[in-house]
Amino acid sequence: MPIQQLQPRQLRDWLDDGSRRATVLLDVREPWEVQLCRIEGSLTIPMNDVAQQCSSLDPDVEMVLICHHGGRSMQVAQFLERGGFTKLHNLAGGIDAWARLIDPAMAVY
Image 1 (tube, rainbow, N blue to C red):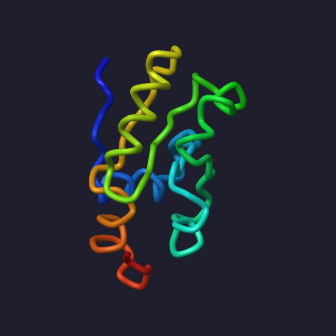
Image 2 (cartoon, one colour; image 1 turned 120 degrees about the horizontal axis):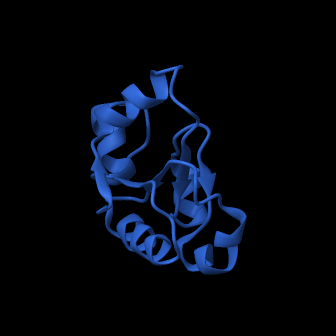
């Protein structure tokens, strides 16, 4: 199954849906980026550290990957997919789109 692009409004609906099983929000941006803005509850593993830390992730849990605009997170999703993860989604437009469409109080950079 190809990695699904998840639009910011779809993710917001997922997060607001109390009946959905917990979703891991994996933010692969650098620490300085996360300090500027982040989605509450997200797990941060910088892209360059994912290979070393992916064993701590559950391949059976739905996961949404997040970066600034969606490129790095898609690369990480493809890496995880090769490692056997199947419930992967990429936040289309990244945290930038989330800030512009969902949370206008969030910093953009």
